[in-house]
Amino acid sequence: MSQIFRPSSNAVSKISLLVVVLTVGFLGWALWGLAYSPFATRSKIPFDQPVPFSHKHHVGGLGIDCRYCHPVVERTAFAGMPATETCMSCHTMIWTNAPMLEPVRQSWATGKSLEWNRVHDLPGFVYFNHSIHVNKGIGCQSCHGRVDQMPLMYQVNTLYMDWCLECHRNPEKYVRPRDKVYQMDYEYPANQAEVGARLVAEYKIQKFTDCYTCHR
Image 1 (spheres, rainbow, N blue to C red):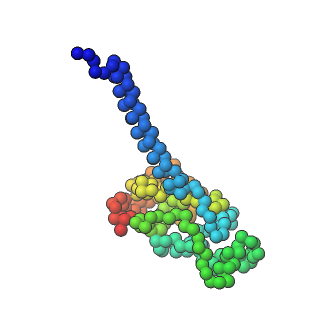
Image 2: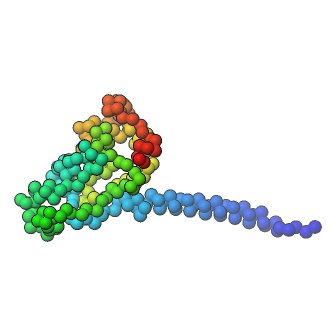
Image 3: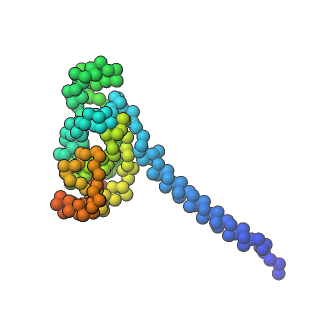
């Protein structure tokens, strides 16, 4: 009885399997890269705003505290956006005729709020409370990056669930003294493991990782 397959069929089948495995692996790698790319996460991309507000100038240059523009961040779930009155408390005296601030002056004159484009925009099915994180010693910089170095605001981290869970599972790596929460250039000490463990106990931080914590 003659052979059904040629001797080369074994080699062809092995090569075919290798090609399939490599193709599937490449597609998986490509999809993973796409999922974590700025295209999907919106990270590292400055958003157009009605006024090109520079955190680098106001925070880094002038040293304005986060709470001046976001006064309710320690008490409410939403950090809040500054009212036009907050902007005009300075700009009725400086840069009063700057063209870029015309939308602010119009808002002040008409009483109509500026419509800012939200940079850190979590899905509706995710619950996040700013006040609990701030009061537990999680710095603004941990989530928002070095805003004091951003001429235009952009999202630094992916805001994906695995990123959130990394902190929830290991809070001792990220917690800092409460009086350093708003310090943008804060550097964790060499003995952060020891300091973090102490702060976790002192601030009564619990490692919440159940679904209900964020999906209510």
